[in-house]
Length: 439
Image 1 (cartoon, helix red, strand yellow):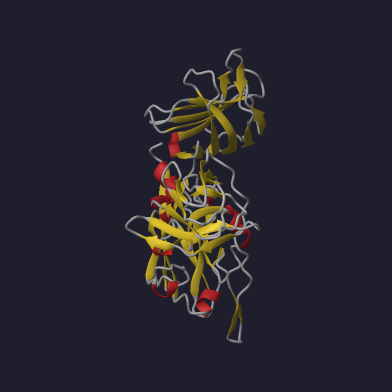
Image 2 (spheres, one colour):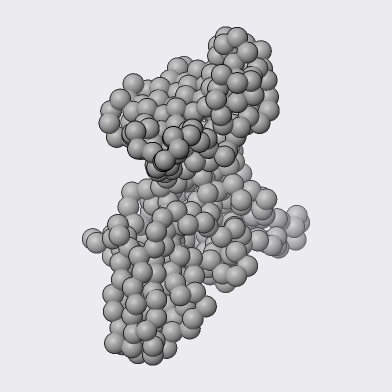
């Protein structure tokens, strides 16, 4: 949908690092000695498959396999395996960028095999991957058995927009920033706050919140100069360490916003030289001054989500929440598409999908006047019997307050095409809303 796809693709939010986002710096007063509190590496769950794998039997002679979209290509050299082996590239949810469906991860198989020769894997990146970092900080990471993300040395080709690695093992892989701006929230209501900080490669090549170690070992020569260059609100830099670097900042949204406001925050970094690249002199990229961008949206009302991995969103007066005689309606419409959630109830709770004329049942309808999406709904007709079948998921109404206060809720589960065919043809819908109730 036109108003939000660009925004959602440029955003990367990573909620699972919040538990340790404050582990940046500590200073012993009066001694002149700084100490660095432990910074735990980022740990996430394994991703789940989102599509069919590309699979090919490859033997001792070697071969080539690419993903259907051309974003990943592996070249197996002669002698890497001695017998015919099933190699696969499968798209999975990217738990490193949990709330950004545009960021895909890949499960490379066979996992657990140690190859006799390194296999070359080429990853293509795009503008969505550069939302909160810059090309010179781009790299590739893989998830180990503990759920940590470990950065692999990667050849950067800016002209082709590719990152190339060599590996003797397979796991779950993704393109990432070896130095990247993260935000606690990317969508805020007026007066809400969002902490911002940096995730970087640590001394063990793991992704973790940036610590004072980079300052002390000289690999970081400047960090800070946080600014709001678009939108309104306040931004407070949080300084620490011997040089007073601003390792993080706190953004506060203004008290009132008319419709939707986009906020762009920048910060500067200089001399972070820990991104391993075999093509660079000394095997490490020498970076100068870089400016990282973070983008937020401030709105009194919003409904955001993904349908089949495609982001959408409505903001401001594009989304409403109303009560209709023992029913609740939450609808987002921007003129090109619509997502409507109806619940036959009048309060908070979990409501399974079903016939919305029945008390306690919920329904979802999705339409797109622009033609980019087919229509989808919470039900379909079974082949043969013609019976109406419903999504097994439920709509969760977290808050259904009095008029003038914010209603909150979410849905996560399959919806089905309304093109008239009897087969289910499901797509996964993820949607959440926070909307001032108007009636």
